[in-house]
Length: 202
Image (cartoon, rainbow, N blue to C red; front, side, top):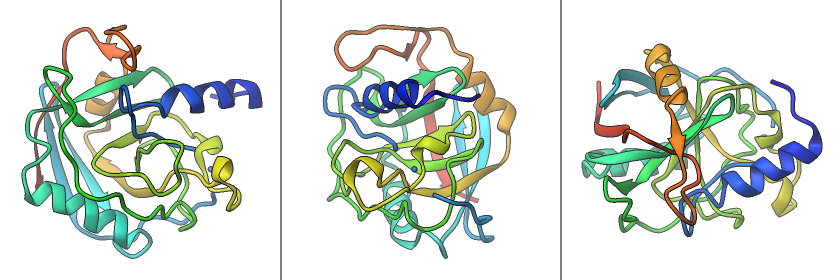
């Protein structure tokens, strides 16, 4: 899906006010295939899929993500933002759309050479470059405009730290969920909640 620069800018501002009222979200770099690393199984109410984490290219992001996994933090959270042809985002709100407390933000590793291509997993954040905490998103398209372009805040990008290696059909099913507005900050919430039942290392 090709986006004009205007459409990209609109999506970026909307998407990554993402976390709801305070949101975590994405913005642009170049690729390098993820090196084989830890694999996690993400079990949702629509099925399971596996994500291979790139500990070499995104060491801090992976360490941060796994710290939440080990705490079983993601159990019972939801994919609260779903935009067909763009991405699915979750990992920060419970089924009542209450934001869960998080750890300190992690350094943005968007300049690691990994691209926001279809099936990759990246850290969601606010407009502040180093603001990512627990939330992540899975790209449903090749979102080049989310890649690292420069050190300017608006062009820093969103850090890719893994990729879906199995169960992409489940990700697609989530992406195709019927959505509706649930008030400020939740304009693309699935009508039927897509619950993350667990995330565990394989």
